[in-house]
Amino acid sequence: MDIHKILKTGESETVEFKSAFGKEVIISLAAFANTRGGKVIVGVDNNGRPTDIRVGPETEQRYLNEIKLATYPQILPHITLLDIDGKDVLVFEIHEYPVKPVACRNRYYKRVKNSNHLLSLDEIVDLQQQSLNISYDAYPLEQSLKSLDTGLMEKFLEKARSTGRINLQDDLFTNLTKLKLIQNGRPTLAAILLFGNHGYSIHIGRFKGPDTILDDLLIKDPLMTGLDAAMLFIKKHINLSFHFDGSLQRKERWQYPLPALRELLLNAAVHREYKSASDIVIKIFDHRIIFTSPGRLYGDLTLDDLHGDDYVSAIRNRLLADAFYLMGEIEKYGTGFVRIRKWLKEEYPEIRMEMREKGDFFQIELISVPSHGDAEGPDMPEGLYEKLPERLPENLSDLQQNILNRMQHDPAVTYVQLAQITGKSRESIRKNIDRLRKRGMIRRIGPARGGHWQITAGD
Image 1: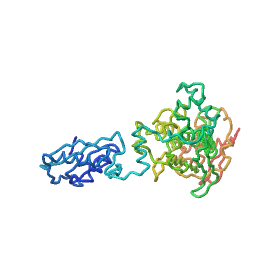
Image 2: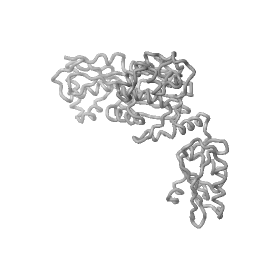
Image 3: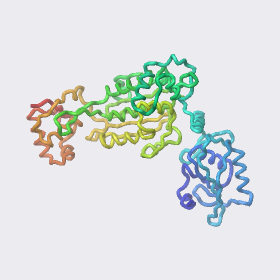
Image 4: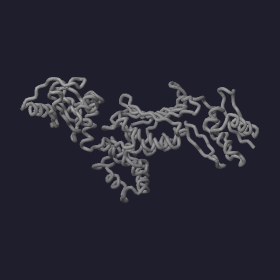
């Protein structure tokens, strides 16, 4: 332990400075035990400079006794006595406690950045469930098994069999009991969410502006069908264009990668907080789409963790996660955001992803940034993408195909940008655009500034 480096760095999520031992020291230790562990350094001021505390032969044992009496379950930190500049300093170190939450005088705390915060009732329940490895969606409900849709249950088991991820029996209810979706003859919350009338909603809207709604849909269906309905609505309201990669056949390109959208939709449904009655809300704008789901990140997972590839996923609703894993919808726990970043990097570099926690909600936003730099971009006329030719003439040069591809991807692209993208001179770009226009393959809609290109059938 490099105490001088710790004192120089200052207080953090895992380090607290105290000038003397007291109630606040025990609160910090309880908060560390409920979070990721940490050190309380007693005998230094807020700047990490040693103060003058007195440590006698019985001091450490007395402090330990006070900590044990004030906490439940009782915690026992490791204490180290150090001499810094001729002054005594005590370091109390506690690891994350396996049985949570730890209370300090019947109050529960967590560590957030460099301060302690009281836990809410929901957070206390979550910590208890994590400690006991209990999933919220595993609670049996009072509803009858007859309330479950038999067709959806059979469809689920058929998909699970097809992936080969589990061996199943012939009997429907035996299989669902084996998977813990039915317990003691009653459906769990997960079973109701998947196959029944659960009362939760996915609300999707297509917006032209912050207050202008063009279309919306409220989905209350079982998740087995509700997620498909949500994807259909999303696909209806995002752009579908076509590009040319050198071959004669055009290829589809959605505004956002569909696997990433499906992953975000699954994340919202599987990891949301079902103790909250709030809806999952999806807002689709011209050049961005926002997924908002009830509940902040679960367990010790942080926004910083999600930006790395080695984060450990904390699962709030394990039965739901297991069900979608068995159907092949989830490839592996804790890899969803890794795959999304890969899709964006390799296939959609113009898309930026932002993640945030807002109040008691988790929000993910995909932002489509047109290459001309305008994040909101001009609105393109309806039907633009339906006018593309099925096949291109065979005698187009590589540069001309590249120009067509870029114009399709970004109809507002300029001569300067085409020159930068292709590495050709502006004069070469101008000559090839003139040739394409003479062949009737492209035309300019609107003025030079503020207009856009349209690809036509040509020849």
